[in-house]
Length: 319
Image (cartoon, rainbow, N blue to C red; front, side):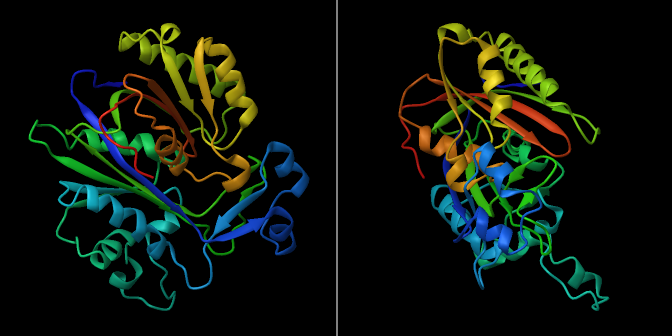
């Protein structure tokens, strides 16, 4: 558990971009890009997803949100990247090329060179899966050890690896290619970070009922540690676009009177990894000073993470 009630760490500049080609479920099935059935995915609530189109690459996709973030934060102390897929962290290479430099053409410096910010230190993680948003918050907080107005730019980017389907059959998750970015810093922004509660396990499978119980306990424990009374607060809770019945149970067991559960456009854009959190936070900023936002992340790894944010009125929401 990481607590920041008096540290004044803020999040702003939230922006994102999805792959430019929309795929309907029947189209994906016909193209052999679904592991599961159309009926199962549509029954959960999925209708379509987005993928890279033609000559579009993940590098080109990610250049858009990062360049927009750099407009808000032109001189970050560091850049922190996160990928759900390990394949996304390295550019494609020729298997016949034995030069180690060619095989390790990392995504991050290539993107930074493209945007001419390769003088900035960068770091990368992909082991947190779709819990990338909160893992980035935890990492970025470590770069803000002083009160000198420093800030860090955080970037997520993932696309479907070649030869892999858009969905996961056992987990019944449909995904989209995506990239998102935001800034974590000292200056007042859209949201103030109050605290993080993070759980990891090396198990390959966690029962969804355990996820429900852990999520409820982790949210309540974090609120108590922050001396936040959720029962008297106006709260929005942001869930990832997967396992909708699981999050409905979490909402019910939290027993918060003024609670707005958020699953943003699951039917329209499917699951976008850690970018789900960026998208819904960007859309739900209403300049409502003091409103609390609980963000829930669940990712392969396995990781379950929650954070509590306080909405700020002064900064404009940026989408």
